[in-house]
Image (tube, rainbow, N blue to C red; front, side, top):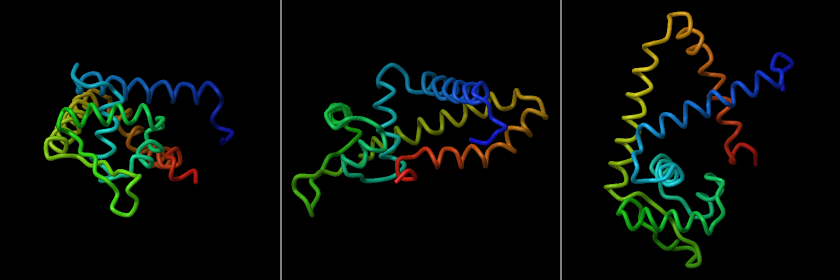
Length: 149
């Protein structure tokens, strides 16, 4: 960790990012789906067909919990589970057309909501945030399971 970040700075960053994510999530997903369900849908919608084991790694969920979430999203007509043609014991998960539409709608709503709030920042705050975007993207990349392998 760079010397310029003390423990309090790191805690403030973690809390701010979590609050932003929670508020965007709460204000866009409605009451129908849990946060975990919308996260799974977003991951599959963003990355494409995934093996259940890969999805579990990305989402940080145990396979049993993930299977329940995928089942609920299947029942809602948003995900489709299909066998892996190379390994019948494994399965792939992909979005249905309705799942793609919901994923894109939620993404657009989050973008709109965040845009509305960004316009409320002062010019100096907006410039600071823009300057920090590259570093935040790098941080997000290093936190993904694939980057830690």
